[in-house]
Length: 184
Ligand code: XMP
Ligand code: MG
Image (cartoon, rainbow, N blue to C red; front, top):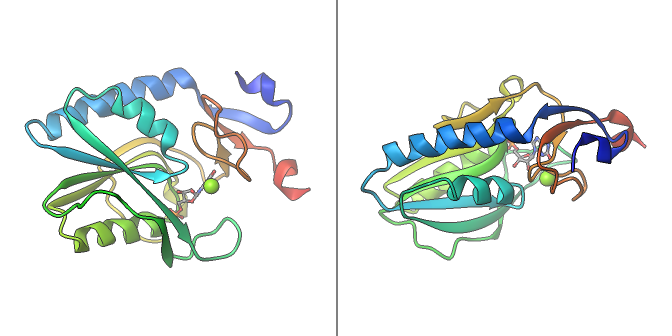
């Protein structure tokens, strides 16, 4: 599957599959070093983080557990409001655990900022964040992201887990969606 299979839905490939693969190798090596000798719990945020979780976790040499949350931001359309509702909670008790939240993208930062506070309130001994993508120009609240794959422009992107209307998640690369797809 490549960009040409998407016809005119995408204006460009922003990050290709090889770039993602190489960056995740580096991030996994860093996580292995940072958490050596500790029991790490990876928390993925459904649904967007499924692909990055699958690829990143398989590059780790340290033993980890994986759990999932689904959250939704109240607010209109594609903008998050910072008011977050848990749709599916963790099965794991995070008390005294080292937690690494794995996300597809950090946009305004509102969702991750809320989630980090939420897990800290439950007594996690540490909560850090890994995000494949970050849009520095969209930030509304500063959230420390320990591991960032790529900083990207403030454009709507899809692929590698990210969707528009549940489509494009399966693309092995990250691309910019053509405006005609969401305007008509
Ligand atoms: P905040 O603004 O709270 O939002 O950091 C993060 C969530 O918003 C979604 N999001 C996107 N989804 N392409 C997408 O497919 C994008 O460009 C995009 N920007 C934000 C995403 O669900 C993320 O978890
Ligand atoms: Mg989405």
